[in-house]
Length: 471
Picture 1 (cartoon, helix red, strand yellow):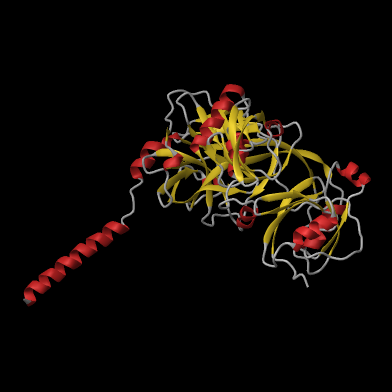
Picture 2 (cartoon, rainbow, N blue to C red):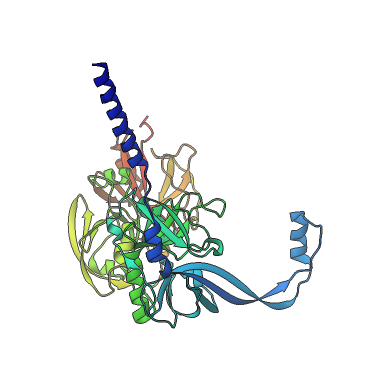
């Protein structure tokens, strides 16, 4: 019996050790690098500049003193110099077309490409797109090794990925990691659903490819999050399907056309969803509609929540610019909106984007006015707009905030104009002080509701949770 127990224990330990070893085994990237590495290139640029030179003062290290010299010591006449930058790219066709980041070649007078076989070429810039940070360049060569493309939509969080590039000028450096997240939105980057990874990316990796384990390019390494300028475990890549659409347009016409509809939007929070009678926080809340825009012509209104555009779900406000931007100008698409407690479908003809338009969040107030009076349950004092004020502000209704008390429940400022009151999906245009007081008086102290506020030339929705007791 003891012998049998020992045999069973030994078998169990052997199987466990094998399972642990198998679980800890890392993938082998050697075949991927051998097959795909030759398609990755080093990109260097030069830019001719002229600068004024400052007299040198050896031994002076005090920053305040150096700033004094920068401000008050005359500079010598401009002298020519060259600025150099380094980046990466990869060949997408054997005829010499190469994808990289727009910031790698921005302002360059000369772009040089070096292959892994040490051949060097001067490249021609076909086009670049700052909004997606993508550029297409071409070298005069043929029969080049080129990459294969994968499907970013099939990537899974936790999946292994590999980057090849030239960090700090070290050609064909290979780093690996996993997909940390998908569909990331970054500040001022409205048109790219970034792939987040923990792959080591440093200056010089920009524009290089991100591979899956099949050896397919799934993204272009573009940005890192860092407090030091070096890698901190947060890297972001542009999905290759986005990049291929951009490069097709750059190749065909030298620029990228994007759709626009002419609305200012903001995120739908849980409190806002509750105020508008929506089942959950989703969609893009329309703050205002540009007069004469495609949205205006289609009948989209301020306070609408866009939940679907052209058959695609709009789960968050960041989805809408991507979906609209990716729609060809002139297309006629259906738009589903949530309005007054029910879904409606409208048809819109998409226009062409000329400039970025985003919802205002914290805009300095416009002309302010002061006034005295009794504060309402929000802890603010409001006054009705005069005919002159309505004419100057181009408004038909609204209440001017004249004073904000220290205990105010609403995040508003003196000079703001309250336009609408929204509660449980019902919207009311604000036209008088007594009307607002009646609306507030009908709420219990724990009520959650929303105000549409105009600040300067911008509007936003402010949610209030809780009121002062009626006393």
